[in-house]
Length: 126
Image (cartoon, rainbow, N blue to C red):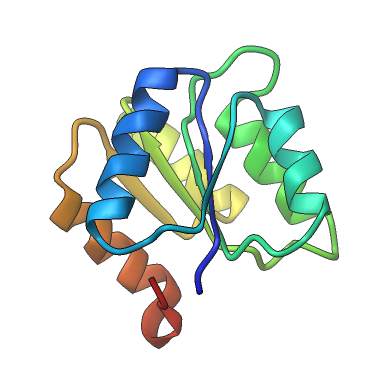
């Protein structure tokens, strides 16, 4: 079973993403409201995919991504950025930092499913 961590300071957006994931068959979904909270949950182990917003207080999604990549124990953890920030330079920064996928809000559940499939490949187990 694929365990997914949603990181977003917006409870509404977390609910939308969780609902989309549930529709796709993913039920092992955890939530974090901030980057520091996410790092604690990632550190506890068992997370297979992080879906993170970019624009969050204290620690942006880009900073979270960099922190994940800097930690040898979790450096290869797949990260999907789901955000309203879509400037080419921002996407380039995320790619340079090691993001595995980038999805602009608003999105359709089918598009989210495609991104997860691209990132996890045959290892997807809802």
